[in-house]
Length: 381
Image (cartoon, rainbow, N blue to C red; front, side, top):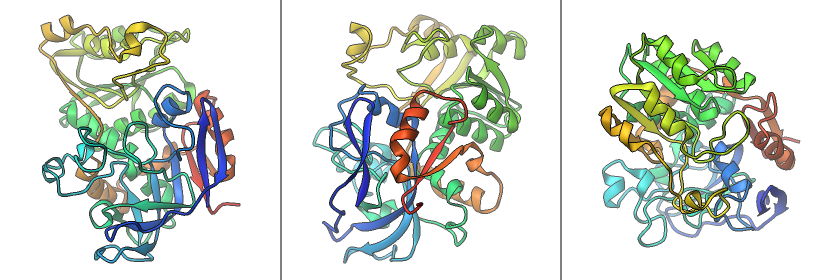
């Protein structure tokens, strides 16, 4: 089969590799029909992780089941399914508590949490390919409604970014009527804004500097703040009568840059502390890593962040962190899509065949104008 394979920093190629096979009775094989390029993929694409050459990218996957193992009862051939980016067994202590983002069986001993095609997240190949092996299929695979083939660009967001954006607002404790500031207007930040709309936030502020992202945020009613033109903290204060937002979402991660292009892994965290009110909550879903060998300074190479904990403590704020437990949210979010309550595909800028993945990665990584979200279609010619 064809797959998007990592060959080194900023070098991805569409190679022919062996098809996946049923390895355990609980497996399913899915023919991928839509698979997204995620902002998290860019950390690996840029060589900022331990992602090994030869691995296949892709953790935002949707497709049709073509084969199931002998122990699979719920999922059957012909079903359209969304595969959560979290690979999880359903039976360990964390999974039984709903923490499928920290499954204790899907990774190496002593490491909780696994994902498709992701650095340090287990051996699982990614889904930017023609086929994907889905383990523990009865537990993991989310069956989709009858309109799934026609609305793939909406439902494919259920594998990661829509639940992840929702999770950031959950960790931030967002209630109806609250004001929220979201740092980062990429796909996850835009999904956080969409989630805040669904939760009836009274004011949604999105901080970014890319005009195409800011336009998308404005389309769903967010107030946009261009941090290349104004001080974003002061802008939030001006919008909240000087008190700060009720809560905030960090949707950037450890490769945060200032408008001049200099990297500061503490930038959005510190600005959130400044932008959120006393006793407010912050939800951090932007990726941070324990080791960053190609970071620009020695502190960051050790995965450390010079975070303003003093002000955070002084303001009595709380912060939630970590990857999203997709299964906690994806069924309900599926229903919102199916009932036309929201349309997460509004961020999609490009639908491309798998063969154009190298071009897509290059443009998405450069944040070129108009490349807001890419969906790869392995069957597209």
